[in-house]
Image (cartoon, rainbow, N blue to C red; front, side, top):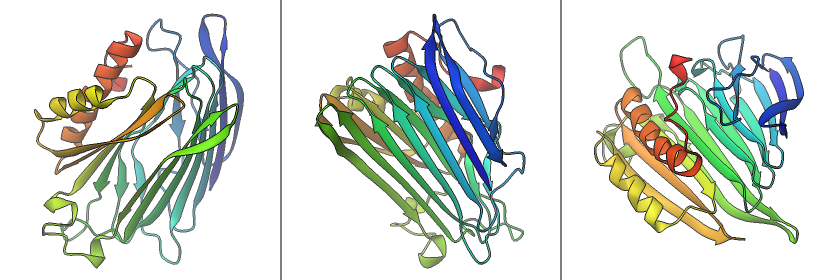
Length: 276
C-alpha cells in the first residue's frame, strides 16, 4: 500500500517541488535536472519492489501554471500473483496553463496469476502539454509460457478544463484477459506478446503530426496504429498503440516518437534516463 502527493511549480528559472507527501510504499528521490531547460525530473520509487494482491497505490501529481515535470520510475513495475483480489493503482494528474508533464515509467511486468487495474484521471488546460509512454510486458513463467497473467485493466480519462467548465476529451480503455482468449491467434494482440502506448495531449497535435509519428514507426519491428481525439478548446489528443515481441523494440519506438516531440516543441535532446 502507498500514497504519494507531488506538486510542481515555477520558481525563478526552473520548476521545483512545492509540496511533497508520501505514506507507505511510495516515495520520490531527490529532484535533478537533465539539462538547462528548467524541467525538473523526479524518480518514483516503490521500496517494496512489486504490487501484490489487494495492494492499493494512490498517486496525485499537479503541475502548476508554467511548470515542467518529467516523472519516471526507478525500475519496472512488477505485478506478482494476486490471489483473492487485484492490485490497483489510481493516479490523478492535473496540469495548469502552459504546464508540461512527461510521464516515462519503466515497463509494467505482469507475472503468472496477476490481476491489475490502473486508473488514471487527467485534467489539462487548453495550453497544457502531456506526453505519457508505457510498455506492458508478460512476466517470466516457470514453464516458459507467456501470457500467464489473469487480467490487466488500464483506463485513462482525459478532461480539458476551461473557464466555462470541464469536458471529456478522451476515454482510453485497455483490457487484456489472456486466459479467456486464444492467445496464439489473430484477434488477441495479433499474436504479439508486448504492448506499447503513447498518449499525447497538446494544442500542436494534428493529422500531420500523426502521419509523421506513424512514418517513424515503420522502421521498427512492431505493428502500430494511431488515433486522434476530437479537438476541445484548441487542444487535441493522440493515442499510439504498438505491438511487438520485445520490450527493447517498443522502448526504442516510443523513444523515437518522444524524441521528435522533445526536439521540435522544447529544443531538448532525446530522453536517455539510463545515462544519468
